[in-house]
Image (tube, rainbow, N blue to C red):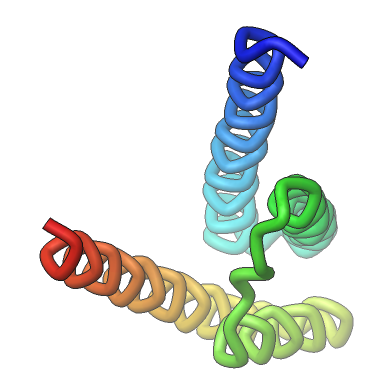
Length: 123
């Protein structure tokens, strides 16, 4: 197989992953807007889209041999948010979304620190 074919495949995968990550951001924004408007059906639809994004992102990462990046706090947050939306409890759903965003930010910061540390040991 020639190197350009491999590179093209990598770029396609990266493009699809980037698109899925952008969609996830849009769906989180839509969930926040729906919760802010006290729109339960809209919140449930946005959450369903968010779960679909999560599956798509995990599938893309696994297709490239990457490990799953879900952490227990994030999985727990998603479950709590899902339970609140199923129960029609918008107050708990709003709290759940805030906690999810905090845990996602914490995970992102931790990952950034780990990458920086790894780079400094390699260089």
